[in-house]
Length: 98
Image 1 (cartoon, rainbow, N blue to C red):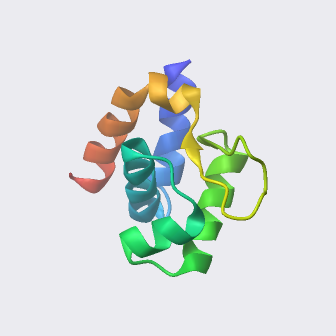
Image 2 (image 1 turned 30 degrees about the vertical axis):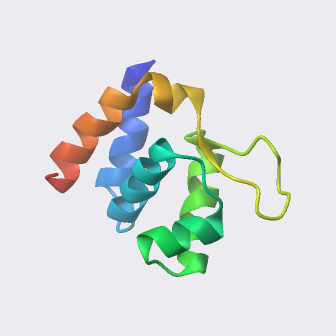
């Protein structure tokens, strides 16, 4: 299971231009659930940029949104990511050097 996650993270974190921002979003959501607006403020990124990354990570199963598309509903790390956080850290260090 973690091999598939490793490949996905290499693509989303290490293989694309927005990888560093996606890593920052995942790290922020690990601290606590947040909605798009809160992430925009905390990370100092444009709201539309945040929404793009959130939508991509939801589509790929890295994030969940139990309240659905309700306005201001928070995002959470998926159980899959939580259980394999060490894989994320490994890819982040290798791809981004931090």
